Image (cartoon, rainbow over all chains, first blue to last red; front, top):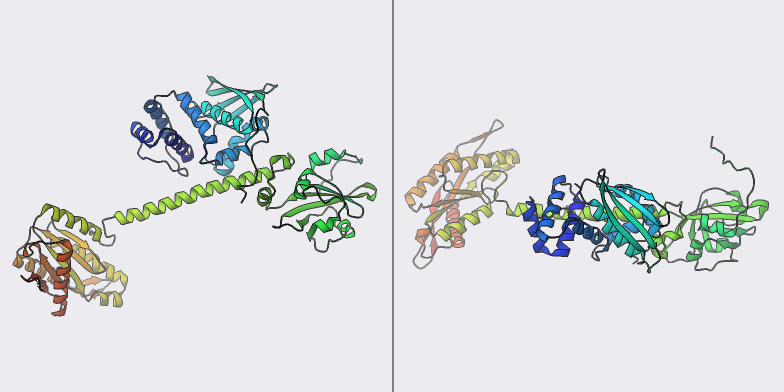
Length: 195
Length: 339
């Protein structure tokens, strides 16, 4: 698994639950290391070990933990890189959602071996979409739900999101966009931080 | 042969359609006066510029000499390089101008050049400032994500370099000879002082080693150092520590050995063996060794620094006395030092 994924998981657990919790997860998971490097590649099994251990150590449901991870990736203040890169995908939330299928390709433009979930979008009209998410890590759909929730806030959209469970190896997410101009969007300029 | 487009009739578009299709268009009269522009050009010009002569606002850099409508007509439908005049930082544009029907003027369409990221920062552009078909936004995405990835890689490289430096600092082995290094020696001395066991320090310096290096080269010198290391290990016990602490300097720690005669005989054996010629590449390398010894039991309160300094002094007394010998340091009652 790409180190960026493991590293994100580590930062999320560390920033949200503290250094002590991260160390407890490392011990519980029996990891051969105590920090992941974003630009190295690790055994696939390690990611699952960390998630399983975090669920055990923190006593939180896997679904909640993964959704919080998705939300954290976009909304954490310390690092707005992913939030900015995602905002390049669309002028508004509808535009963003309808470009979701391009997300894996966008990611691979920069990190060719990053394992981004395969996303398949169905447009049911009237702001109703369903998204099929296929990825090796069980519960990846919950990460996407958290990420979409945070992006909806960023775009100022009022959105109903629901994880509909797993079917034929894919997780289904329903997206209902009630009002995409519900709030003032967070500002986004294309140019990097204006000096 | 280039394919022709396939539209045979002239069409007219409402003004708003130009803005949607080409947010960076500039409409010119037959005289070259700006009579309209798209919203993104409007943002760049802060809404000014209507009624102004094109060449007062833009400079055409290439092709050279396009400074009038007549010249623009000559270069119709060619790729133009332009810059906006009177801006703090030069923003470059690519452009193409085509004549309107009935010589009514020109349509000039622009796009940002390679410095689109600069332009986006400078003018705080958003995706709405670009046509949906324009890949400029994707280019900005790539520039930014690439920068993020390169930063992450740079950080990784810096951390790996730190780790390497730390690992080297923590290493205990001299890579040439496989003996301990000065750091290993320090650890052994710390341990022996903690245990309060009696011991001796033997400081060995090779004689004539520089001559071998100078006359036969560094490879021969390295070969000699490796042979010396083997000799020292052969002539000492398993519980002794042999460390290489300088180019041709070695220190041996001998726990439990305090007898002067025994130390002198070990030293003599070492000197005798090191004085045998070492063969390297058909050449005989001749060296010898001088040795200084300090014994912990000859001090009231021995310290590592003091004993090392005294062994060193005894070593230089051996050198002064004609090399190829060993001397033991004796601290006096009044703390005067003599070898």
